[in-house]
Length: 360
Image (cartoon, rainbow, N blue to C red; front, side, top):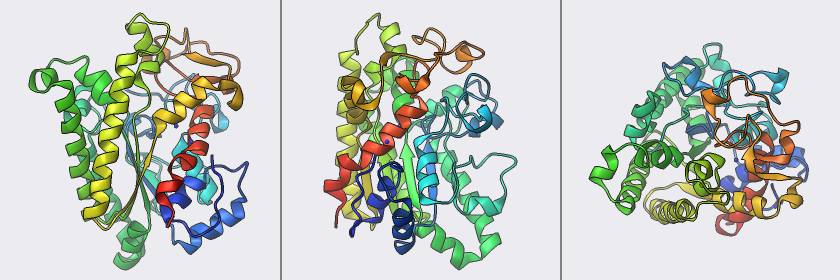
């Protein structure tokens, strides 16, 4: 879910990766030269439906988006498994850096090893920091995504040799984007975790699981990491519908703010203990700003999705549904996920919210 004020000066490589997303305001050639000078090799992605390009297509799960109207604005109007009308923010990052116009899914049966070198996504829609969240929908928990990353390393080593492969991993940008499903599909719907934890305790548990997995990423070679916070959960059309409210549900948004604060605090600790450059993307603030200032971004519809009624459909319930005429005017594509336009806004605005913390 991202503009970039181009600060062509000495910035951390993390700033570079966030900066590359705004093609309209950036000299792409300069950005690509900056990427080369900082040895940015590829983008490796972990997470949920916000960054899953279609890995779930090959899983025995109902959590898929590889059918119309998903993909309505993708290349060739093709439903790839992305839960949007078009590309995801991570696709725009890869495009601007200059490798590919998209980041493919690691489980794509047509993906060639040679194409993996420039980055892949291990993400799985409906996953979360809590392995139990993924188990509910029979998708890939983060632990399994990391196991596939190890398979990725083996494949790239066979192709390029151990030293070159390790260099690629060391110079890659790792992106981690999840957390929404831990609350919406797990804690608030399933009785198991609430019987073990209060809501605050569960947030702490999730942050602990995040930290453990980041440590594992580091052990496997990660040195540059972008962590994306959770969006304003209370503003999702589905949540508003289920809570019978026409405005954003305050309690859910307070949860988002609390959880993002805990993530940000933990990342500060991780940066001080691991030799790792870490940045945090405040998606909550970006989405709320777009919703409060829609005309600034050319948006007109901020309360419902483009698919079906826009109030409750997502995933399989969106299958074959009629859509709005112009998704570029909408924040939400379905009742949960952003439009391609909103992903571009997130990408464009992310750097401005983190630059002050990432400059050398």
